[in-house]
Image (cartoon, rainbow, N blue to C red; front, side):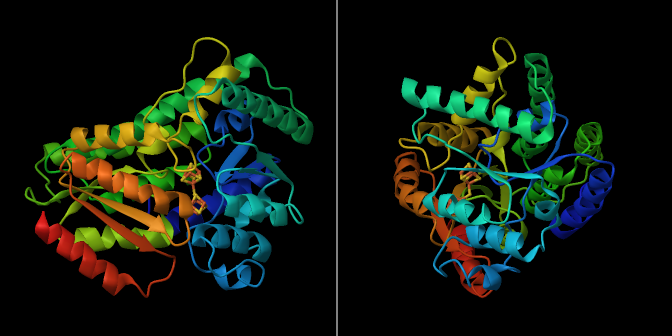
Length: 376
Ligand code: BJ8
């Protein structure tokens, strides 16, 4: 089947990236779902999600950053300063954003050694001032890309990029919506591998073909009677911080306890694929509106997260929600109280697991996940 394990996806991506770089392609590295990838696609650049899912470089990062900072930020910075992330090494431009305070301050340090552009993301989604600021930031990014890479980005190029990204979103959504079936045709770990792995396919045509192949082979196996998941396995939705790499441990403990993860309401899953970007009209406004509406906990208030969360609970017939937050991620940790209350009012069982990028808490995570699954 197409798409490999997390480690394989990253490794194969490195090799593909080296080839592209050798052929003279410009590369943009980014960290966050708010980054409007259509702009890089329009400019015929390669964009890549920078490494931030392993604890490998955290000791180096902690020589500069405080130990009690979110592991995702320490990992990102550690990969940058040690040159252990080939994607960071190959990036001609790194695009950050003013999402959480830790990342904002880390980008300042990153700017001392890398070519960094920080998007000023407003933390409100509906005010005219916030919309105007964000649209202006999209224009500022377009101008930066044009200047750094010597390209001119037209509306037509942006429209074509929107169309292609929409197709990619539609296909990835089709992948995760396969798990609306009962029992689902794939485990949550497999679903996560496909969604995560797609980030490391840089040729758009090859990427959409591979995703389509993945969909076809999963459907075919199901039609042939393959049932890898037990019919009675409790169906879990995961919400919270982004996942991938070391945090797959959370999916594993849930599935080892006999449940199945059917949906991810986070940046590795539905948060970035659920909605399509408008194709008619001004492409810059469409891109700005599309990204500003992402329901991340850095937004205040953050109604879009709750709308998506409840819709997915219903669509995937979930039996329980597990929220994973990373240590020292204040926005998700504070919002977890609202998530818990929101779900309680709707009689949906909820478990909050806080973790980091180490492995020492696996026993404790297993115990808590096991008790939760047993109660469903
Ligand atoms: S759109 S979830 S990718 S900001 S780095 S906020 S975990 S303390 S990653 Fe995120 Fe964009 Fe939002 Fe998605 Fe917390 Fe850590 Fe900050 Fe983090």
